[in-house]
Length: 325
Image (tube, rainbow, N blue to C red):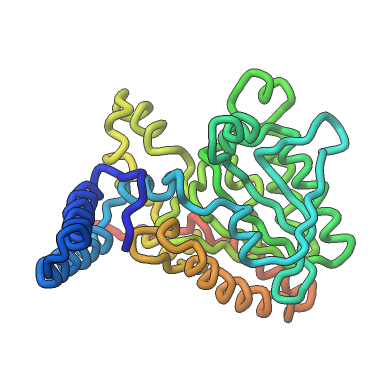
């Protein structure tokens, strides 16, 4: 597997082995020497090191993978999964927020409505998309499209990937909290099937503002949390560098969220993360979406709404165990 140019701290042993492999291959090419044995040995070391690293990731390391700059974003998945995506713009009140996009498309031959957080790749696009942090008009645009989906009987597919809603003064002045709260209420009552997929970061109310759906899916290296690890560390320990400790405490990774019922299914990623093979990640996502969409579209409306209601009523329920004296 070819290493990407952006290397996380815990991936450095793989980078060093890859450099050795490149050097050997170049040497064999230039000198004509038979170095196949040495090359095979390095390749085996790379494979075993990959397995050792990526099968024992800490919660903080998975957060880092979720934020990887090469990780597929929503529009990447839409391009790989859907046909004829037609983006729709504006909240009809203030502006068009490019951090939260939406529009119609065909998935597996079925007309659907897409809403999604979208980050940028280069500096110019990151600024244009506000680093994937929506402002109030983004959530109001999303709500407009949800209502359109309801009107025309289109299932809703939501792709979540944000560190959180934009917390700036302008965003607060235009009532971002109210915009998110209205979305939570309206999505809970939306009269059409809905599925959310956490493809990267799922931060706070910024994520939840398009995430109150019938099914919530998550990629294995994504995270879903009430606050970022850095924010939690700053509050609890007054030290942002305690983020790894906070990530452990927050139980924000896929493997811990599924048993709690916060997410309904974990989608496997290629070894090392979705950025190593976006097509494979998209294929896994497509089969999972197809299954859940088929189940939901087979329900009559009263059953669909009741099932959604019961899903969210169960969250946060726990049993107290009495002390043994």
